[in-house]
Length: 180
Image (cartoon, rainbow, N blue to C red; front, side):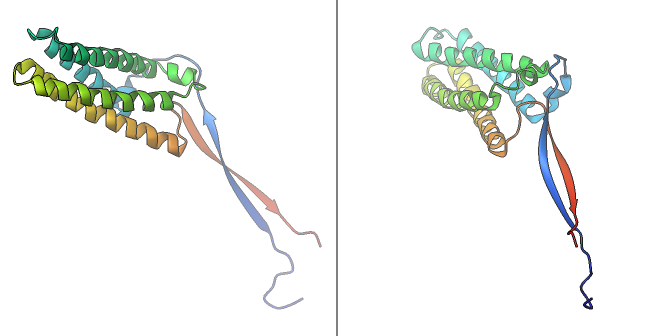
C-alpha cells in the first residue's frame, strides 16, 4: 500500500431538492396584512378609494377625465380588495395551480400605467378643480404602489417563489464506497 493514499475512500454526494408545501384548507390569517405584499394591497385599496372620493365630490366629477379616473380607481379597488381577501383566507394557497403571481404582475403593471394616465389627466385639470389635484396626488401614489408591487411579483416569478405556501429545501445525502 502506498504512503499518503488511503486504501479505501468514501464519496458523499449531497443533492438539494425543493418540496412545495401547500395547505388546501381555507383559514383566516390576519398576519398577512403585516407582510410587504399585504401592506401594499391595503395601501392600494386605500389610494383607490381616496382618489375615487376626490373625483366623486368634485363638481366636475362627470367630466370624461373624472370618469376615466373613477373607472381605474374602482376596478383597482375591487380587484385588489378581492385579492386581499383571497390572501387573507389562504384561498390563493388552496388554488395554487392558478398562476397568481403572473396574474398580479400583469394587473399591477397595467394599473401602474393606467393610473399614470389618469393621474396625469387629473393633474392637468387640477388648475380648475382642487379635488382633481388631490385625486392626481393619490393617483401618482398609486402608480408607485402598483409599480413596486409589479416589480416584487416579477422578482418572485424569476426566483420561482409561490404566491402563497412554502417551498422547503430538502437535502438528500448518498454515501458511495468503491468496491475492491
